[in-house]
Length: 402
Image (tube, rainbow, N blue to C red; front, side, top):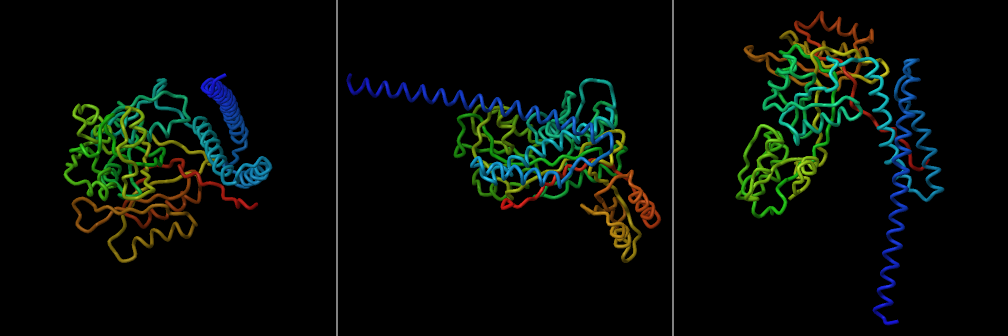
């Protein structure tokens, strides 16, 4: 047998062995998926039992014991403790969200019997609002229809008019801060906040397949996206930055470009959705860049005491020294955490301010209602914007040396 024949036979054996191993990996992956599905079903059963006795969804002691035991078992299987911790933090978060969704659906009803939930968002498919809405309702069985809008005002208006059941609207970003226009709109709307969603924003430069950065002449970006990426965008000499109404519109501009001379500031999800090429990743000013979105409805929703929740409200104070401090002291006295304080000028009244507050708590809690009653006696104006489940799912901390 010649040397070439030997090499050919060895190559066939390598390929055959590789294919067999890949088949085994595929079988293991399918088993993992089945087990994860089974775990989800058990999580729903746990939620049902907890619901009967109004037990809190989170049990950090149980989670800590679980992680400790799994780390010790993993060590016997030569699995790294950090890998085990990262993996099961995700699995636990998934379980918590499933149980929260179950509790929410047991205590809330949609505004209509339609099998489809109509959601107004800024832009359309491909926008960050679109992906945030999909993320928020990932655990819901109801289908969603997304109604693209060009302004924040339109997003809220079509919910008020009944053309949409929900609105998902950005309220603040860890890089660029609060979106003042949305704060002002919320003050004058009859709608209620019923949820929140924090979405990780990972800005990229997107273009059609085959495009190259050196040939890009125009970059389309939403004003907020531009603001969050202005350091890197400012270094791109000879490229015009054109502002558009939404990230989805920026992406659409690129899709319609046949010259491959345009790019858009958008996310990897948008690139995957429209099969665009990523010319440059991580172009935001800050590495950690989240946008917080609010979920808006025509009617308020009662939040189960089983769920960690927030209350958003607007207050005005008297124009005298220490008035704001007097208001905030009321929360301190009742040990109610204040998670946000944002001031906005009162239109038409020079130097007067409205204050937007987020506090941890539930309107069904007597301690909260007593505090709000006291607040009402010292504040000329108070408006509750909504009570809603918190999106903050804190990871259970554990020492990997345990």
